[in-house]
Each structure stands twice: as structure tokens, then as C-alpha cells.
Amino acid sequence: MSERDWSSFEPEPQDVGTFARAVAATPSEGWWDDDAMVEDVPAYAAPEGWIVPLVEARTSDAEEATAFADLAEAALRDDLGAPVVRDSVHGYTDAGWIDAVAVALGAGQVLVWSLDGAAVALLRVAVGDTLDVWLVTAQGAAASATLPALLPPERDGALTFDELPDELARTFRWLVRRGLAVGVEPGGSLEGWFPPGTDPAAVARLTPLVRLDGTGSVGALWRDDEGRDLVVALGSEGGRFVVADSVLDLVRLMAVGYEELDRPSGPPVTPFGVLRAAELRAWVEETFGVDVPRAWVSGGPDEFSAWMDGVLGEDTTPAEPPAGMPEGAIGGDVDVLLDALGTSDAVERIAYLLALPAGTSQRDLALSGVEVDLGRAGARTIWVKLKQYPRAQQLLDGIDLDADADAVVAAWGRPEGADTEEGSWVRYVVGGRYLHLQFGYSGISLVTLMTDAP
Image 1 (cartoon, rainbow, N blue to C red):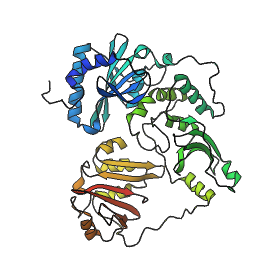
Image 2 (cartoon, rainbow, N blue to C red):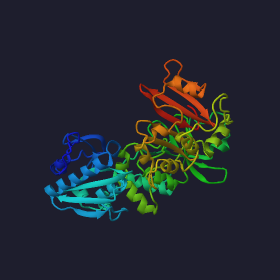
Image 3 (cartoon, rainbow, N blue to C red):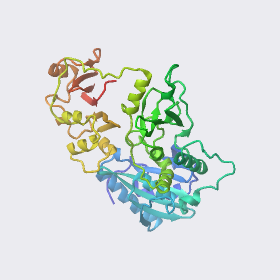
């Protein structure tokens, strides 16, 4: 047994067996809840059981996460006996509820213990070189039945959604029958988007399909200049962009696990939507013979935003970068990051810079202090958190990390923009891209690289 002090973990790994038995005996809340507690431990509640994050990769290193998982597994074996060890079961027909959760989270192996009327699973999910560790319990029918057996009989008079394209109608029929909400609802309106006098032929190229969030954002079908029907987003705050290349792609997007689809880009921010959409992911992949990705790329500017600019008569001429700013190379890692802006392989480029393995994801990069916002035209914004960035000393040649705004201005000259009162930030234009430095008490705290300034 490890001599490490695990008192900051709830539960401690040596107690996971006792904890799991207690959780398995605790009735679930009967609905999805992202702010639940079970046995005084934060958890996600589902109608079928409980999902407890035991270790989060973002707050644990590889050695710590692996040690916890090994000790927790040993405690479960001591308390509950030998588990059934199996690979995750993909698809819908042959999978159980725990399988769907395991696939949605990305667990490669599932350890399952059967209790009276319940099941307990320990999941290890690789995140970069460390782990998320999850405890999942299933109760009642969900402990042993396959997913189709959990689907209630179809009710007489149920909505058919026949006004929607076939793949979308079938998906909403399944969601209603299963009693599952994923943040997207049929409906939506173009009201308020086009002023009086707008060409009716242009407006006719848009057909509202769904409400993408609770604030009025609309997903619509748009016939582009080449005759393709793309799914576009009309955001309640004015954003407009292609969100999916087809209706089937919209269905795939719904199963990724975003809590709202007003601007889906990168991996979902929290696991809650991913967990809630786990069964939908399994159903979509089997029903339509497609893969559901773990992250999505969308967001303008793109062909739809350009078309809308033209229809609305808005000026789309790119602004010239302000004069008097340094152009060309700054020196250091920041040059590689600036070059990654506007590229579709920005994640791969940054992973190579940091010597991370092939297949590194946006979430993996975030563990190294780099967050990337991707759109259809490539990376739009890159944030670098100096405290987490492993090559902080190599980020900016000639600039000390403890520098303040005055020191940066002395080295680089007059900035394009700055906080002139408190000196909390400066912004430069480098090769037509924006480089924003934010300062804290001990120097530079955040470096932001952007294709467009806010």
C-alpha cells in the first residue's frame, strides 16, 4: 500500500470499496443533475445511477492518478471480489448503460462488479500522460439490461416531427421516447435576422430547424451557392457560421455532448453533457453507421458569414493592421504559435512543439497550459497560461517572465492597444496577427494570440 497522504481525496482510495457499496445502495435522483452529492462526495446523478469523478487529470499528475487507480481497484477487489474485465462495448444493441458511459468518456477497459440489483464499474480514461478515474454505478434494469431494453414502449399520439428532415426527425422521436434532453429542441425562427426590404429569394434559402440554446440561437438549413444544404447557426448574440455540413452531421454533433450548440468548438467544457448524451452517441453510431467525434470544429468567419454580410449589406473589407507595430518574428515559441493561427492542424503543430505524442487532443494541450479555439477556417485564438506551460522560458525571446508592461514596451515599442491606467495588458500586431500579454503580480500571466482583436 502507498504511504502517500490521500486525505485531500474524497473518498481516499483505500475506502473506495466501502464507498462503492454505499453508493450502489443509494437510490439515484431519477433525473440528470450536474451538481449532485452522494455519500457527501460531488457526483453526477443520472436516472440510471451515479457517476463519480474520483481523480481529475487536470489536477493530478500521472504518477498520482495511476497510484490512486491501483489502490482503488485493490480496495474494490478486497470488498466486492473479482470483477468482470471487458473492453468497452460500442454500438447500441449489445451495450449496457455502463458500456455507453465508458465509451462516451473514452475508457479503454471496464471493470464491473455485480451487487444485489446494482452494478459498480471502475473506469480509467487516459488524458495525455495522466488519467481521469471514474466510479460508475447502475441500478435496477440498467445494471444488467442492454440499452434497447431500457427504451420505453412508443406512446400513442407521440410527436413524429415529420416536418423535419428524416435523420433529425428519427433522432427527436428517439430522444422523446427515451425521455432524454440534450440541449437542442425542434423549432426556431428567422424573425429579427433580416430587416424589411431584404431580398425574399435570399431569405428563402434558409429553413429553421432547431433551437440551439435557451437564448434564441437558431440552427437552420442553408442552400449555398453550389446547391449544398449546410446547417448554419444564427446566434442570439449575432454570430453566424456553418455548424455542420449536413443534417446527419448535425445529429452527430448533438451526440458529442455539448450542453448547448450555440458555438460548439473543441471538446465539451465539462463531462456532464458528454455523460448525458452517452446513450444518444451509441444509438446514433449504430443507427446511422457513423462515428461521433469527441470534439467539433465550427465558427466563422466562413462562407455563410460572408454570404450573410452580403445579404445584409455589411462591410466585409478586412481591416488593415495598425501601423507602427513590430512585424515578422518575435523569437521563441510564440513564433510557432502565431504561425499556427488560421491553420487546421494547429493542435498537431503545438503538440509537436511540446514533444507530446501523436493523437494529442485539445484537452491534452490544455493540461500543458495551451487552449486552442478552432473554427472552420482554422485556429482563431490560442491562450498560453504561463504557470502551466512547460516551455515558459522559451516562449518569448528577450522578455523576462517577470516583466511588467513598461519593460515590454521598452523592448518592443509602442503597442497597438494597452491598459494605460493600470498596465494590466498590452497588445501588439505581429505579421498581421494579434499578440496580447496580460500581467499579474509576478509578471506575465497569460499570452493570447488572435486572428482578430476583440
